[in-house]
Length: 337
Ligand code: NDP
Ligand code: GDR
Figure (cartoon, rainbow, N blue to C red):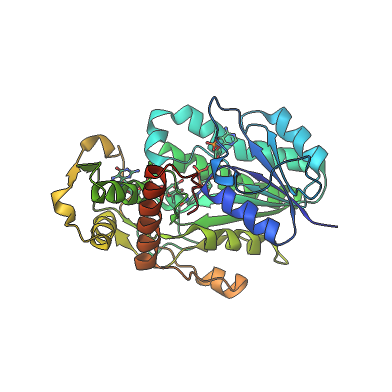
């Protein structure tokens, strides 16, 4: 019998890659999608989700992390072997504008998933999408033992979710794991995160349909990896004998300025002619530098990143050039090009 996984956040960057990864491993995958007034399943539209097709193994269900009753009945009905809680209001800058909503979905949402899993009493394994943002202003390198100092409502909510997962592990003997993932990007990255904002703008500027790129703090340093590789680490963390927490990162730090420069270099343009600073993109409190030490993940999971900074920038710029070309030619476009 095929193993069964439930993913919250299936329609997001990571959820879409994880769904594909698990389907390739032979899992039956159930995903949560939330009600929206416009289509929000674009990232997984390429996967067969048609429930009437005899061999369909991906099923999407309406639910929401703010609705405990729907989570409880979903888990009770599906009886998953593994739950991946990836759903979140995941934008750090936006969390300053909607702190209550962020705390509810990103923080309490995790608790609701944990409690629904406990109530179902099915012995399932639970992955919580924790974040390097929890380290906040604690200087790099950051590892599993590094103290948290969150700098945004988003990061505070993630700290709450992190400790809730630990608490369910210790209180109820549940197999709960936190993956503390550092920034990871891809052509499926949301367009208002800085890497994708830059690569999309580079493609448009090269094509002559955009003049300027407005950004905030160029000095921030991040440890950027490649999303498809990070979902494997999530899965590996749930296959171990004991539940533990893992930092997943590349170990390399680069500034936003370096990312901008490398992306414009890829198309032979001088970034200084196009980039302007807009203070609207500054954050009330910034996280200056995140660089992860992933030696525990390497040791326990046998995991290491393959795609590093230069290749990541190249993959993302090239994908956005191709995407733009396809849009201009009126071709049917999938976001994972
Ligand atoms: P995305 O923002 O791309 O995806 C977030 C997902 O959560 C979407 O599917 C979204 O649905 C869903 N969601 C939002 N609100 C709700 C809600 N109320 N109920 C149910 N689902 C909801 O994030 P990523 O894929 O980049 O990240 C996945 C997870 O990992 C998130 O929890 C994020 O905080 C965390 N993380 C991400 C890192 C990264 O660098 N990408 C690093 C560390 C942690 P919809 O599509 O409808 O908006
Ligand atoms: P981050 O990602 O906050 O690290 O959270 P983001 O790409 O939004 O910002 C990275 C850095 O770039 C600076 N920056 C800008 N950011 C955005 N979005 N837009 C801009 O115009 C801009 N200009 C400069 C930011 O100030 C910041 O320092 C991501 C999310 O995926 C979280 O969910 C996840 O937990 C963390 O990564 C790890």
